[in-house]
Image (tube, rainbow, N blue to C red; front, side, top):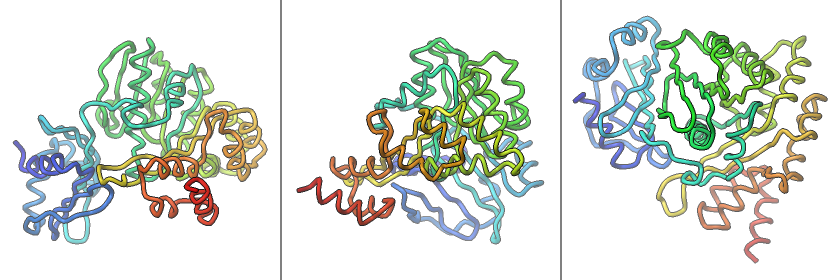
Length: 355
């Protein structure tokens, strides 16, 4: 058993999401969104380097020594899988371990809207799950893939860096590819995907314009493409995609995005009021005709209004989602107010609902 496994076992038992190991510091865990120091000695560079290199294959260690940072997946027997990042910092080597449960929680178990089940079985188009790092995007996408896998006979192809949730074939055939191990990069894997007869393509992250363009092309040619972006709202997601491209290409990208977009699900995580963990509040934008027109006409500033008036179609603002969670006693009102689009209006709505 690797020495690190003892830390991972402690983290797993406590229900922490992340473990931070850094030269010149005690270990630190993130529990329900907050950092806590572990009662352990300060880790020195050489000691920590030895512990970390015990986990990584020789070729990964070589990559780290060449580049100064490294991403890979590690599975601790009997515990969970971990998304691991090694990096160099001023005091020496450091690493972060993000726990990925071995079993995939379904949409209902995660408390997500049932609308996501419909999105996961669409015949084609682009569905994006967005939010900051650590907001649960990977868990949501894994639940959507699992629903498709359970209900339809499709070829699901995932391209990830690294593979996080491992899916076993159920009704569908699933092939999971990892950058650096199975393919060179997202672009090469996406080009190859179009010759591999997929129905559903999961792209771990749309990082650059080449990946975004290939993902849009895949959606345009009759595939369901699921992916993530590090944006905090539906409108900002549309702007981010378009602004990645030079000015002369933006009209074409707006047209492609308007044609292919089926939904943007933007997540924010909150601590549960009872202290039992965290819960996601979702903003949902659906690619209805009004939304497509606004994207084509470069009027993304009006998307928020469409979400507010589209509740009957299944759309919801982040404020709507937070109000519901507060009303049901799941999260604290003071935590929600911080993220409200208009804090004064949000307070008034809370007061109105509680009266």
